[in-house]
Amino acid sequence: MKIRYLGHSCFEFTESTGTSIVTDPYGDIGYDMPKTRADAVTVSHSHYDHNNVKAVGGKPVIFDREGQYEIGGVEITAIKSYHDDESGAQRGENLIFKFRMDGIEVCHLGDLGEECSSSLIEALLPVHVLLIPVGGNYTIDAQQAKEYVDRIMPSYVIPMHYKTKGLEVDVEKPDDFIDLFEEEDVEELENSELALFRDDITEEQTKLILMERHK
Image 1 (tube, rainbow, N blue to C red):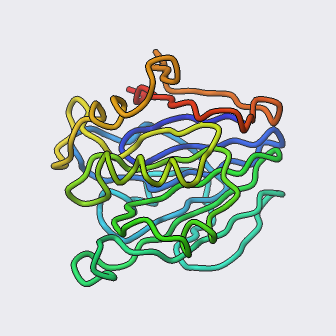
Image 2 (image 1 turned 180 degrees about the vertical axis):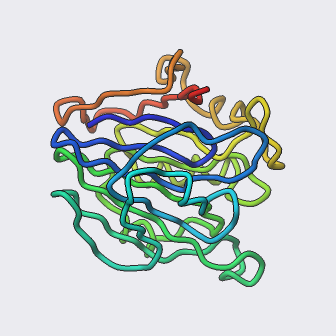
């Protein structure tokens, strides 16, 4: 499968069969969404920086509710969680999406804001690739994100929803999160695309991959 980072919490996943999914397309956040097409779009919640579905071409199917789905051979599970640590009282609910593509379990946490719990972890496992917000303020912060990583133990963790050049959303840079990992376990890509195969999945360690936003 291929992963393309489009900025903020937006990714484009493409299975080897050609089925493509875009997560959390954004509106006006200081820079424009790159052009993209997809068979499906997932929306974690209704905030403007996550639900700009009209920016995605190809007449995609929209998934924005809790449940289990399938499209083009890709299994999708949407799991209810909260955007804050007060059971949604501050910022409402958040959907976590799991995708099974080419035998790889991918988990996109959306704008997760609740504290790590055993019940939520059990609902998410297994996870091979974890896409996790690390910028704090509106979501979990670096320390909370690291707790999720330590308990989920994915093969790869990819930070999202953090401060980048041009972003006008009030979140922190990813540095505090990156500093919680050993230097040899961190890889910073010079581009926005990553290809993963089932053979790349290992239980021996978690590798952090920082992906550069497509410009």
